[in-house]
Length: 140
Image 1 (cartoon, rainbow, N blue to C red):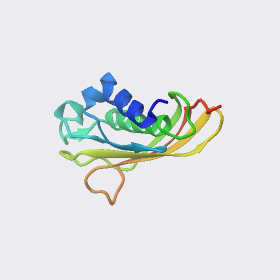
Image 2: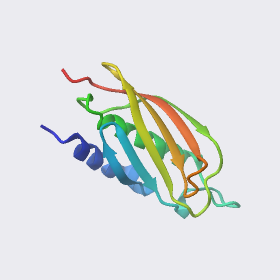
Image 3: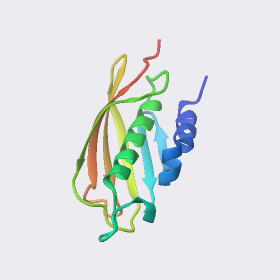
Image 4: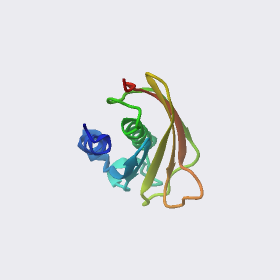
């Protein structure tokens, strides 16, 4: 039997975009994932303020949500994003690591539903929140 947590961790850590963005898996298991993305000058979207581009935050949240689905106990395979809505609450603080935490809260035979939050080091106020639907292969 394949260790889904180990597989999901290896998969996420091998994705070229995850590597380029500097994503670091912090925790993963039973439908929950936490991934950090350290501040990098290459990710700046506004050179005047030094704020990270929203697309980098979006990629972090999508990847984290997918990891939560991949390690859900009822998922028998991989996953792909069906729909992902991201609400940006504020700009991330320049120079700070952004952490995404995703939870797979409901599954059907073929769809997993996920919620996520992205926080910088000011963990009292979210940078962004997300809700999404992802493909899932139910166990037989």
